[in-house]
Each structure stands twice: as structure tokens, then as C-alpha cells.
Amino acid sequence: MSLEIQDLEALFRLNSDAVLGVEDGVVRFANPAAQTLLGAEPGQPAANVLPDTVLGECAESFVASAEIHGIAREIRCQRMGALAVFTLPCRVSAPGTDERLDAVLAVMGENLFTDRLLLDRIAKRIGSQDDIPLRDSVSMLYRSYYRLKRLHAHLQLQTSMQRGELRTEQQLLDLTELAAGVCDTVDRLLRGTARSVRFSAETTEAIIRGDKRLVETMLLNLLTNSLLHTAEGSISVRVSLQGNGVVLSIDDPGSGMDAEKLRDLFSGEDDPKLNEPEAGAGLGIDIVRGIAEIHGGSVLVESRVGEGTRLRVCFSRPTIGEHVTLRSPVTDYRADGLDHVLTELSVFLDKSIYTQKYFD
Picture 1: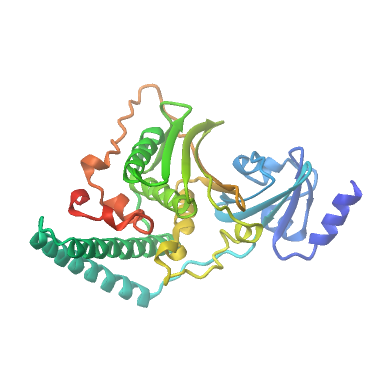
Picture 2: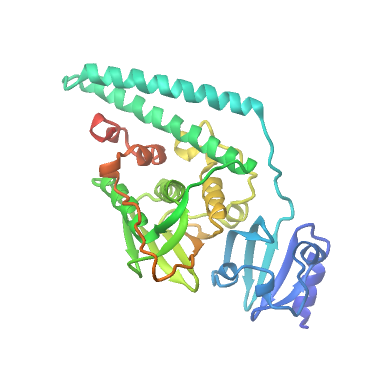
């Protein structure tokens, strides 16, 4: 054992979080917390302790979310040459109930329904009048409605996931087809701006088992986050195969994150910025992480200030017999209505989008 690893082992011995060092696929050191939490011991294969999707990431530093021993865990990694140091916070938030939150969500839902009825009535009365300031005001009200609707939906979704009460409708999905449809729709809404969304796939068919609505919500949240932090340029979305998994990658040329923000990305320690609508209330990454974990997947994030962010969601591929013919639902917002995408991108899209032209 080298002196460097001995020093690291001593450094992390009293750390309350689980810390282990991996080199050449083998655990080189594991502090007492890692031995208790993960059953990690020096000399054992790292694949017995951490998921392959996390071990296979080559970035110098990244954060991830993955299921370990049946529990969703936050994982942080910092590479030191050939040695990768993984840290797993031992604290796990316990699900709970809050009757006051339920009451607030119920009232929000009732008021959103009423507000939409009144807005539609006002918009119908205005019709094609040439009162541009009035029509602009109605568009702003519609956008405000969709932002509140997004917050309401995210709070409901997050609460349901924390309590283990979320009901899903999982089916075989072609992630290539689904992501292509979402990206095409978002890119159309971005025309005339300095941003665009470009989709590519290394395979014409990437099958996962999942809830179509939730997977769409996850991708729309990822695109929203990239758009909020990208002044100009193209956001790349790609579907690829990796071993027995399907990988959804989102790369943006945006502002990126510093090491401190990246470290705390999955910690849940940041307060939601409810007074900053363009910040999205700070629930987006929690939604993405929760949806990925519901599907047995993992999330990896790599970012550098001024160099953009790369985020990957890794899904497992189901075992499909040759006799199974996949009939994936068509993801076509132009046919099914734009309500979902208008909701999820409401913290970014311009008010001019929020006109009767796009509504159901």
C-alpha cells in the first residue's frame, strides 16, 4: 500500500460519510462508515460495492444518484490520477406526511382550475382585436398560470415520491422515439432565439421499461435547466447503448457549475427560490433524480464553470423475447396538445408562446 493511500485512509477515518478509494477496479481503502454502509473492504472488486454506471464514468469529478442495496444514494467522485475517491453521505431523508402541504396543494389546484377557466373566457372575448397591449397582458397571465401549474405539479410529484405513494404506468418504451419527439417540439418553440436543441441516436431503437409521462417530465426538466443556463448555442441530446443499459445524455455549452455547487447538487440543502420564477423553484433536479430512481436508473452530472454541463441518465434494458413486438406510443405534441411542454418549459419560454395558437 502506497503512502498516499495510507494518508487518505487516515484522513477519512473519522468522516461520518462513507468514503472509499477505487483503483484499477479494486477497493484500495474504505473508511469505517463505508465498511458499515456498503460492506466495502480493501482488496475486493469495486463492482461488488458500486454500480457499473458509476464506476465506468471517466470524468475527473462528478456527482451521481443511484440505488445501492435497495436505497437511493447520492455519490460524489473526485479522481486523483488513477485513484477515484467516492463519497456517499450516510444521511437518508425519511419519508413523511404533512397535512398542511396537502391542504395547500388542494387549494392551489382548485384556484388553478378557476384561473384557467377565467383566462380562457377573457381570451375568447378579446379574439382577434387589435388591442396589442391587452393581448400581451393575457399572454403574460397564461405564462404565469403555467408557471404556477408547474410548481404545483412538481410539489405533488416530489411529495408522492418521498412518501412512496407515486403510481406509475410502466410499459415498454422506445427512448429514441420518445426523446426525438420531445426534442423536435422544444426546438420548434425555440425558433427565432439564440438557442436550439439537437437530437441524435446511435441506435434506431433503445427500449426501456418506464412511465411515458414521467420520462417526458424528466427530459423536459433537463432541457429547461440547460436552457436557463445557456445564453446561446445548441443543447445536444443523445440516446446510446452502454452494455446492458440505455443512456440519455444532455450536453449544454452553458455557464456550468463550480465544484461546491456540483458537490451539493443532490444534497437537498439548497432552499427553493420561490421568489425567482426563472429559477424554477429549485425542484427540477430532485424531480429528475426521483424519476430516474423509480425506473431503477442512475444520474451522473459533470460540470465546469464556463464550460457547460453534461448530464447522463442510465436506464436498464429489459429482457425482450423475439416474439415481442414493441408498439411504442407516438410522442407527438402537435397531435396530443402542448400542455405538458408549455408547463415544464414555462420558466424559460417567452410570453409570446402563451397564446391560444398552442393551447388544447
